[in-house]
Image 1 (cartoon, rainbow, N blue to C red):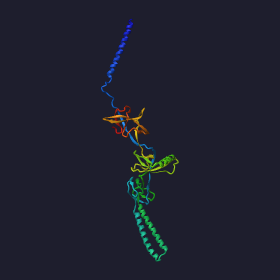
Image 2 (image 1 turned 45 degrees about the horizontal axis):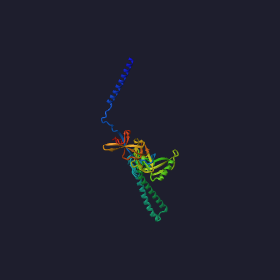
Image 3 (image 1 turned 30 degrees about the vertical axis):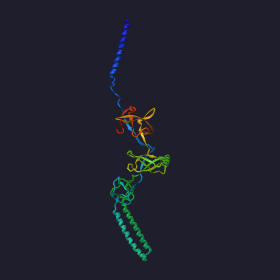
Image 4 (image 1 turned 90 degrees about the vertical axis):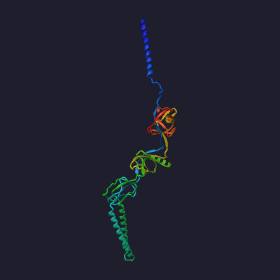
Length: 369
């Protein structure tokens, strides 16, 4: 009987200890738990971004090269020493501008001598004509005098032309290269290149299409009133214009099975330089502007695709859920067919912390505010 009393006492002690532990745990939990003295969940901060409008008309990208419509090597038409260079290297020149002067004294002397000879022969011919009328000289003699006068007149004209050629003029409008000779150099007629002039406005764009693409291209050309080309300039700017003087090459390249396509570009800002490669986008309709939303702003539930926008109510911003209809994907954006306005701002970061009609603290990543 004594053993049973000891065991009963041990059971009571264990139960007592367990009860103490439970009470201590309850006390500790109440001690450490935060007191609800008006504490509420803080307003979530979210990043928002505006929508963008973009031309989404169907277009085809090509890699193209810029060519000069006109280019010319400046070559002297007379021989002699370069006396003057009258342009700045790399400058724009106009048709008719004097670029070089080749020694003129020799050609002036030649013209003076040719003019004196022509005057003398003209006087002789006049005198011989009077004698011929009186039958003092034969027809053969007057014909020889007339022939000599014509030769003298031709020599004078040539001397005048050669003197004009001592002023080497620009045959076109364009940008001139550096001078390829310096003052004092002897240049020979038709053999030396003095400089090169390249037309920069307008320029020609050339790209290639396959023979199959050419057929499709021509069908669209026949149906379209205008063909538009978007040219991506070296600075990233997109220049849009109506394609001018568009035409195809006259044969297919046997190695690449393609045919060249040519069109002219105005190049008013002179950012297109002959020889450059550029990306162009061809389209057969005018611009088709659409509203685009960042894909990272999109969310879905059983009712469809939605975004969270923000609106200002009093002094705070409220999240608003909007269901939208979407079109094609363009890079990281998607076309919005309905449901949003151009001035809407959508949540792109922190969407999981946002509830409809609840306040938010927006950070506009478009302007950093």
